[in-house]
Image (cartoon, rainbow, N blue to C red; front, side, top):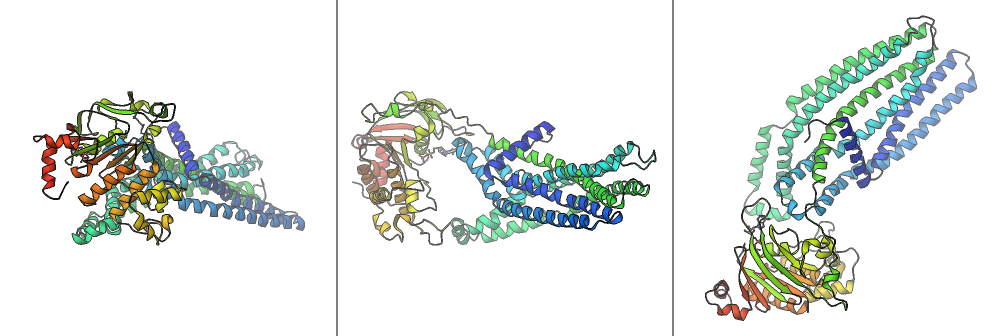
Length: 619
Ligand code: ADP
């Protein structure tokens, strides 16, 4: 986090923060500002009208004027109160919801950042620091929302009070000393000093609070994990019970207690500074009051104006103090916002070309024709020294079936991740019809792939929405895809057919499905996308080898003339493919059809085939 920020930087940071608020929570900042102006106006109009009433009572006592003023004060208070409570109602609701929208700030960034950065430990740390600060303490955007009220309120208080206090200095007593314009400087100084001492106190208090916040980040993270995630997520709850991890959680809580993260020792110092400031404010107020009363006693104005000046000077004092407080606070949240912007501004380094894919993939008659080539591709994951892929050269043409087999960790998934441009090669080039894939528009390039990853994810939406990955979908097409993926029997038991919601996160009537069923839904999703290129990356790991082989063979019929890549460490699943590439330690060590590879008795494929054949019948 940046320690020192210039005024210019703070203005820029605050303006950007307000921009973010307006984008994600429209109306919140504006509503707060309007409410703050009304809060400032209300007492000052009362003070001004009360002064007029008292002056009238002490002077001519005209009944109709007094009644008019009383009606005016009641009416103005009523209208301001009504307007303010209407605005507050709306903004309170928006404020309660703002945390969800702040979450969207982070998810929008995560959605658009380079995939490689999502796994970068330094960037993860940056994201964690910014989000923990925001969601645990409101630091940054939360403080900006709360500070907005005080900023506008203080400004309005200062402006309106100055307006009410001007006549104090232009009214004359006839005494040169009391009428001296130097009093303007003197009274301003008294008001200013009160504000200054308050601001100093606030800064010191903020520093202590910041230190305390920083020291409790570990506590909060641990609490979140042991108090919430460990016990409340069903996925973890199974292991918690089996391995009796509640004991570990208890011990962690105990340790946290021993760490004593309470504000304890800080309470006294945090309370001392404001009380010292209060003494300075009291002395300043006293000087102002004595000056007003003396001027009134010397005949400069009537008794009603005493009420106006003392009321307005009080408001001016608190306005200046609030302003100082707001500025001291602004310094703190600007530092937190800086940290947030550092995360939000992480650039996308991945080169995104402009070339449309369509021209290269479809010829003039609309037929697809393309070829993908890995040219001497090597790849290391960010922050690692080991190569996950080494000097990979591989070519496959439209309509081909390619199987990628090999032991765990041999680089099969990495090969797919590179093909889908989730990462770019460290060395070498991947080409689509002879053109480096980096030159294509990224979204367009991705649109030619349907991939079912090993760790695919389904969402707590309806079955149809999961298959179509859209809110609106073609019901018939969804059903067809589910049937093709082997989900027809289960579909019949779904209470609302394709409209049945999966899982119980959002709906108590949501339906839980097994791992194998989820895999079929994921396969249906790939079919629904109807992309020219289809990839199955061991999505059938939860199935037994025979069932997996069945699905792969069936899927092969379903994909028709599309290009398909099948990944599996079970060789029997892929033997129907035109070509099999055998991966070992990030390199392709063998290529050919099943029949050809099985003949190479000294090859890895033969060894793996024989090893697997021991456990089940492959034929
Ligand atoms: P396979 O799909 O054949 O099981 P992978 O492509 O997943 O193999 O992994 C290849 C190698 O890359 C392995 O050594 C694995 O540990 C490593 N690896 C995979 N993912 C990452 C990652 N996100 N960061 C660092 N190393 C990784």
